[in-house]
Image (tube, rainbow over all chains, first blue to last red; front, side, top):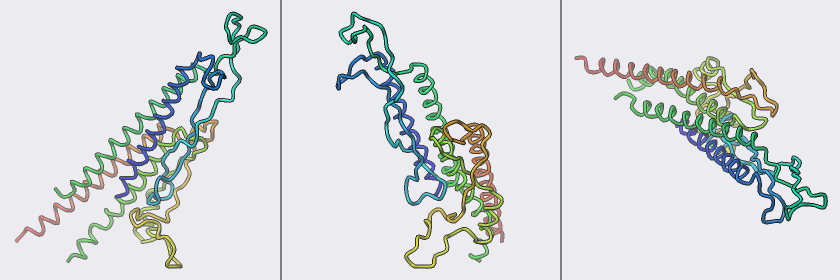
Length: 137
Length: 133
């Protein structure tokens, strides 16, 4: 039955949104990480969503969501004057991560709202399928 | 007799199929609300149902045995969904308006249930006709 595709679509969107939420968590947690495994300050990460048919049974126009890639935010790093830090440059500036906390918060709210919308969608479709199965009873 | 019963359910069956297809499209729109450059798509229910009734667009025409039949499960292959005119286009090229999509999704669900109700009524009256002696 075609309606089952809605579960795949909503499921893929929920996976994608939870990955986005994960990236937000990573960015928020590392908003002040001056150094990382490669010796450089932490760079904010962003997910890139892509619409994609999830299987060859899907009718035209029905697409799920996949995370195509995780990119590093190209925006400039934040410079903080702190000559006492061991990571300060010759002029006393420390390169801090380019995480924009306000942006991450709105990202988080947007992701959780989208996630909820998909859960609702699944619930509605579940009811529809149950009612279809109960036909004639 | 069996053919007659089939016929009496044919219209509602097609309507249910098209509703199911539209449900998938709207689900896809809601799922892709944050995908850059995604264009929201929908069908004109009346037109597609008419096409389905007249037997058009229910399967893809095949000129070779090796062509895909477009998925026998969907039953609505060959129908081209159209792009929705965006009320508030966003800067990333996405044309999904969450409120519009959710309203349409709820509406489509209600219509789906209505069609189910019609079929149930038909089943009841068919059974009643069979039981009468």
